[in-house]
Length: 433
Image (cartoon, rainbow, N blue to C red):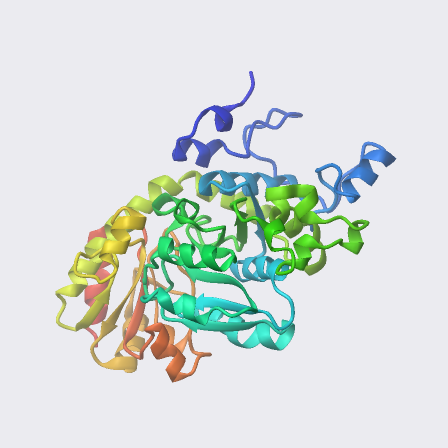
């Protein structure tokens, strides 16, 4: 019996279980094997030569390709609706991977200012110092800001579709139009929304990234990232702008990726050049664990959203809470965008302001009993942190303000526990400040 579910069935839940993982053809194992092998045997000399010349796809060395990681890549690409994915060691590695294919020293990126603090540091400090890539961060609430920031050196626009930790929802279609008019790719980090709530390719994105560490893996045990190529950007139409994809590559006998692979040029380049030379490959065990996490993604995300909405409503009415920023609340300025792009849902992560500023925020996170005080989100368990003193502490006060991370801000990642227990823990913590 053949296992053809991914070819004949399109349901999200079905793909989350079956895409990329048919029964093992040798042993019949129904669970995907963990291929803990650094290298793979070639059939003969011709097979080896074809693989190294990119004339044939297959498994060579686990820094480039691995069967377990390949299964995860196929599954994520199917769920996002892309032509292919490339998995990396982390979400930050995914961002480095995709930009390494697009940018040269002196090139420029326009990005939303509402990003994870580590990404802001990556864009504003590490990338300029290490690679000469410059970035302009703009307020995404006015999408014209993206257009005004584009220069003749701009090679991409990057946003978090739903931002961590501020919960800002970006008007994807508007930004996609700006990117298309400028002839540059639009990259959307879809970590917080996941493809359960939003599929950015449907709204004009060209590339999607994830930190798979978060909701896709979900259990706090597997680091990872991914770059998904939508296969819709015409690299050959912009030859001078993207030389890595449009000029002969000396390490592959002068191959031109856009000519040899067409719409798959970026996807192939990410493996053949990016993983090979930058070495940020994911590990097979982490890929296996993430595959297991994705199997329940369609079941978990609605529960995360349901619990988060109930908690947000409770905090809105709490006397020790200044404000709640949750896109799933009708009172949120981002609710219309959440309706358009995320089915009205606000996801499982949001921030709120606690009366008493930094001292109160730090006291709260130290007083929780059910919530775990950790630097992570997207876990099955409820998590809490005070961003200004931890995840965003490397930023100056002006940058924190621009990101909406003041001293009073507390970030919650709402898990799938009983919502009554989640609320009770927050109440007992707030009672101590």
